Length: 144
Image 1: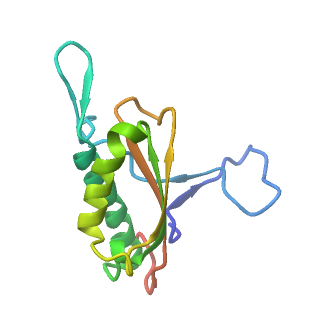
Image 2: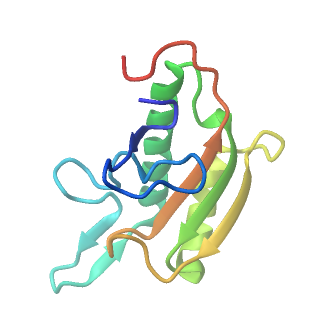
């Protein structure tokens, strides 16, 4: 495993014009039991979302990845840039910001951030996705 996850290279696939894999493995956004944090079925098939819980869970998952990659030397503080994707900017922006501001109470040390409204994410049960760049020092073999 490299510092940015397991690469996926299909032996029979076409190689890119530059050095990059066909894909990269990352933990799924759902729990091992198949459920998603921050979403409940209200009984009639309609989904009820909790942006606070989904934001916190998403950032916790990112922290787990960073800690694993750095041998527990780094965490969310090592993120230098984040792109947040929200499926409903009007409904979820303030809630996402509330969680963000709890985790990053000081703008001087918070990562740069962009928030983008999107039509949908890979699952209808996801209302937020976060892509980050973190700078960590790796002094061990990841996955070893």
